[in-house]
Amino acid sequence: MQAERRATMWLLATTVIWGSTFFSMKMGQAAIGKSAGRETWHVGLLFLTLRFALATVLLTILLPRAWRALKRQAFLDSFIVSMPGVIGIALQAAALRDGSSATVAFITSLTIVTVPVIGWYFLRQRLTPALWIGAILALSGVFIMTDPLSGGFGWPEVFTLIGTILFGFQIHFINHYTRKHDPEAITLGAFIHSVWACLLILLLTSEGRHLLEPGTLARLVQPLDDPDPIRRWAIVWTIPYHAIFASVIAFLVMMRFQRDVPATRAVIIYCLEPVFAAAMAWWLAKEGMAWHQVVGACYIMTGNLACEWLRRNEGPVPARPEEAMPPGTPSPPPPGRC
Image (cartoon, rainbow, N blue to C red):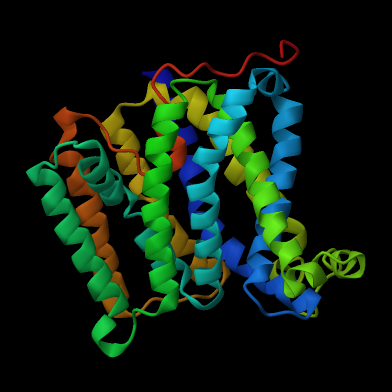
């Protein structure tokens, strides 16, 4: 019981970190745009390039054996795993430039619906009544939250929804390829592919090349002219935060503690991610929610939980890519044994 309680606290802490990534990525992108003098979607790609480059270095330091496990086929397969994720995160980053952090977070949580739907359409997996009920509730929540009849469902919401579908594909790919290769190697390969893919797009566009100029990159470490210290030093803390906590530490926590928690409890914990995202966006970024957004968020939460509670005897549906690691994934060795 003590191990289960400890694992629950670790997973809850990780969910808080995931929730914080929405407002912090929005803040980090805005800071890069101000420092570079370019308010374009390319700043999101630069943010992701720096995030995953740092995450690659950190994972190499913490788990050097991942390089030994990254054989040729694993590296090629990790490309398939990484592409839906990096495109989805890039779309999410673009959506956060003008969209609400809370809205993006709640729509992203619909992966608990998109995963089984993708499995049904492409893998001939059965859709149960529980999933239909959960999907109807969750999609009704998106309708209420975004108020499309009044023009509330714009391009940020469209980008987020497309990204959520791509995350669903990525979860299926992770489920498949981590059974063929070492999960650490697949993660390392996915980080590497994410870096060069974002970097390539930046190099192919004039705006992107401007962001990569030495002078522009040098300005990123300088404080902004903002009285709020969180915003003034946004670039300095958001990129390391995403690389260290949201990428590397989240992965290590999932590998170590996911197996010690019952699936139903884990899904309930993960469903709290958009709630944490909305709370921190309100507290730290001063982003409020209208009453209809709160009502829609409650519908989405209810639909997500229904997907799990009503089908708890059929096995869990991963709600995030990290949750797709197969049971029995080996935990990291003690220090000094890599």
